[in-house]
Amino acid sequence: GFTGKDGLGLYGLEKFQNDQLSAGRDLVLTLDPVIQASTESALEKVVKEYRADWGTVVALEAGTNRVLAIANYPTFDASNWRGGNEDKWRNRALRDQYDGGSTVKALTAAMLLSDGLADPDSKVYTPMSRSVPGLTINDIIRHPSTLSLRDVLRFSSNVGISTLAERLGKKRLHTYLEKFGFGREVWPNDPSVTRSLLRDWQEWRPSDYATTTYGQGFTTSTLQLAAAFSVLVNDGKLV
Image (cartoon, rainbow, N blue to C red; front, side, top):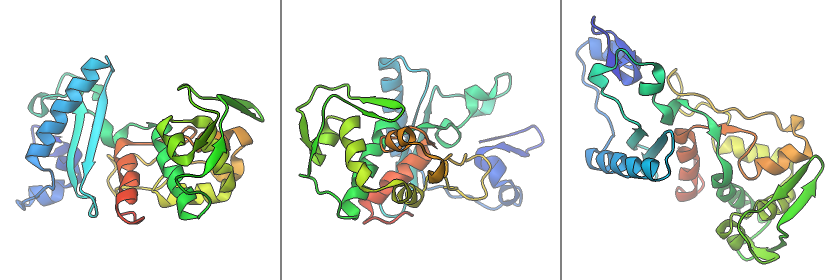
């Protein structure tokens, strides 16, 4: 974050913790300088390689969700933030919302495993496309016509995960998404952290239900997505 000429916090932790800092109390972060630096370096390389407009990374400590690194690229000089618009210095990892996309397939698979509706070797018929009312679902990567759940993830199959997820039902899928933290505040009382958007399951059409299983139709921030994935390495518990 940064402050104005009067020392008043204007953004980030400088704003959120302004009262504590103004009172002369220390604020100790959980960021790891080595992890932060290496994360920023790796992110810059990948953004340039894929000619992306921007990129973000959040690294959390397994089990505690202590934030070890938050990186955004392009970067900016926090001591010289004036003269630019918010696009230059906004902490996109916390504020920007987007579809989680195929990353969510791993979470949908976890739901199926948790409810005993599938195991890693469960087979499903997976043509390269399937139709649901109002939508044709397509796969991009060529694959066999029958896949295990393990291979559904390997080939990132929209057809496979949406077919298997029909075993969950709308309400159960929605309940799980909430338990993963979507549609909820991930960092309460901090206005710089945007809440993800998740519609009520009763509003879902068949096409909405299908696309939700592979991460479209609801939003997430990078921080929220990282927190959701932490559940997979924390014995199913969201910290």
